[in-house]
Image 1 (cartoon, helix red, strand yellow):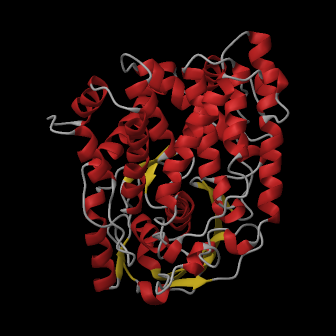
Image 2: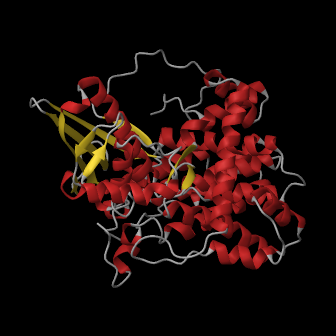
Image 3: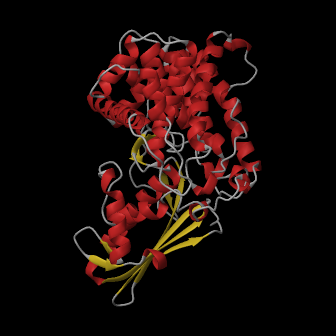
Length: 475
């Protein structure tokens, strides 16, 4: 939808793993439905609630934690604030008591085994469909259908247009061509231009504080992932690797928190292979946390949430003398703006476009952000974004066992490396000689998504998901 107005904070969201479309989206959908219930019923009148998951939400929903997200949401929990250490305890309580405690303290009979239904057929609008229905003591019913369309975005079926007037941005851009035109006419960088747009939604000090909050979540996630060992949840029993990589690279240096840890990394000289290992370590750390229902930044999705932090950490640790808040803010703003063009012109949903819509988009975002922060021109920045996506075209989404682990975790490392490579190529190129534009590649990505066989779109019904022996999917 080219007229869509998308803020930096629409693309970069704080949420819970392992999936933005299968965890965060259904969580937000359930919150919307709760509001509908509160308008329609006295909660004490309710007798039952049922949730039906459709398409990709059903096929990989258990491995992606869709049922967990919905139950927590209906109990009034929020993905930005819930204590992640309590998730398993809360879910076990629901399963054992066969009740939901709705906001306000009303306890409703609820059996997850009976009241969460997995329907593998797709609803017409989108492969990620979720339908809620409740019934009251006097026989009244309420039913609503929502679609989780990627990156935590949710669309309600037959939703009425917002009565509020649309926001009037000073530099609205539906695509990269329009962005470039604005930058040329105003003689602004991408960051400078988008900062002016963001000020329509929020005051500058609020924009800054909210972006730094996102950075703090990213930093905490990388740090935790690098300092947690063991196995990931689920039947695959995947061993965490970031812990051992960090331990080998950091050596015997001592530190007590993430800032001291970063200072240690910056203080040492590393070889080229070691820097590559650090980049992989940063990306893997995030996605191991994501796979463990940890708190991550959806950037633009949870499955691809490790790419942007990894490239940002690479920039801060190995490319600049000091870590400055202004650099972090610039990086996040530019990355998010590039992500918005894929949302407007294609998709950021793996259930619609395969993994090119997740890792490919995040790699493109990171490549652009790194290029601008390293002093690249607007043209070079857009070229870097194009190169990164060009070499992810056709990437399928085939999670083994319905879990966001294999090949998802390693793919974040690959996406980060490709982003850095794309930036390097752009710096050594003349954008005027480029044969492919970012808008060309976004259009191609969308056409590729439409041509891609459905089994390669987050269903665990094709690719690696079928060719790993003795593994039975959790759905």
